[in-house]
Image 1 (spheres, rainbow, N blue to C red):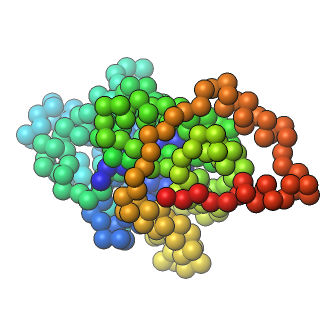
Image 2: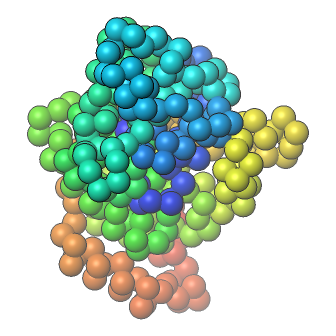
Image 3: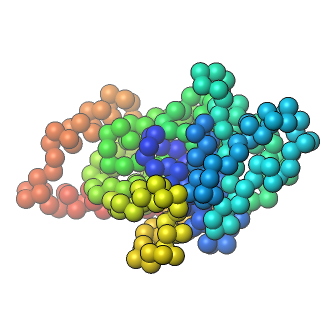
Length: 290
């Protein structure tokens, strides 16, 4: 199974991806996480350092694939998760899609691409041009990381459009939304009401999730010294279980930009009156899962 994780820049994709990867490994799966960001820090909390990128390695070998070994580009991370960083083209030049393509090509040359039960692509920000939509060419499912804010949902809607377009020619489905570090979910619910899609999980506003990134450790590793965080790991294990159930997924249809703006801004301007409409609020806060 191949999964592409997208979402607005800074929303917590890499932190979420690393913890999902470990959760999948805890369920007995052989997992490879591929970072698709020029910052090449997707796997930092898994390995504890910035591993060499595919592009850097290819350049150092003058693009002689036969001179590259698996251990040159695949690094073992915490929990047994294997890690690869695609890297990126020089700033202002080249295409991220080319880098992803070269990464997949090299992994196939090394007979590594098909050795894993799960390959998870952690993809740069909310850029969904043809280049950075490239991981969708290889994915069975796309997960969108969001929060309860307008910008993140606007990005999610653009990613939704990209999934719909790719699904015309590829066996790609939207697995659903994952809410990261949010104390409310009224905007999320308003969005999925207008643009139906599964909501896999919504992680509460837990500061340790952000702190884990700063410490360079996953939540699963932090539990070793802070057992009180075990309950947070259960959220990621739940996401892993839903992924492993091989949900049918959907081909979504995005909302036009102006319609989305009006939909979400109306909720900002006319918040739910807790005293007058408690029942409606409870409905909005209800979970939709796959």
